[in-house]
Image 1 (cartoon, rainbow, N blue to C red):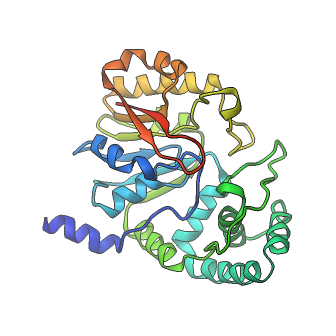
Image 2: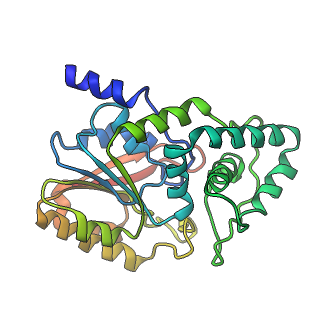
Length: 285
C-alpha cells in the first residue's frame, strides 16, 4: 500500500483524456481494467488515440512499469509531446483561442482550420489540434487524402478549449512516469520491441458493423480489412512470444472469424454512446 501511495504522489492527481476521440474507451474502462494483468514487465499501447486506458491505469496505480505509447497520427503524438515538455506555453495559446472562440465561434473556428497545413511550431500545432478537437463536429479527427483536416464546426454552447488543470496533471504524469511516445506503425514496434511478459493493449480502428458505419479517416491511409487481418497475425505472434495481449474491436462476424482460435477468451461488452445505439464490443485476451 505504501508503494502505491508513493506512485500516486509521484504521478500527481488523476488525469483523463484531453481530446475527444472516436472509439474512445472511457465507457468501457471498468471492464477493461478487469482484464489488465496483475503483473507484467512493460506496457505497450500502439493505437493510442485519446489515451483513456493509459490515463486510467496511471491514475489508479495499475501502470506497473514503463509505458510505450504509439500512434501513426503525427499530430496526435506531437500534442502529447508538447504537453509533456511545454505545457505552460500550450496553455497560453489555448487560452487565447478560448477568448477568440467565445467572441466569434464560427470565424475563429474556420480561421484556425485554414491554418492546418501552414508552417507552425510544434506548440502551435498542438494548440490547434486541441482547439479544433474541442469545437469541431462530434470531436472527429478526419483528414482527406492530402492530409487536410476537413471537419465542420460543431454545435456547442460553451466548449472548454483550455482545461489547464487537466493538462498540467497530464504533464506531471508523463514527466514522472517512464513513458515513451512514438509516431510509428504498430507492426514495427510490436514485432521488434516486445518481449515475453510485456502487456499490450490493442485498440485499432473498429471493424464497421455496417456499410454506413465505416470511418477510418484518422490518418490519410485509413484502416482496411487487410489491416485487420494483419493485426490478427501480429496478435497471434505476440501470444506465441509469451506477451499478455488484450484487444478490443467491434463484435462482427469478420472479427470473430479472425480470432476464432481465441473464442474461449472472447467477452462481449456494451459501450454506451450519445448518438448511436449501444454498441457491442469484443474484448479478446
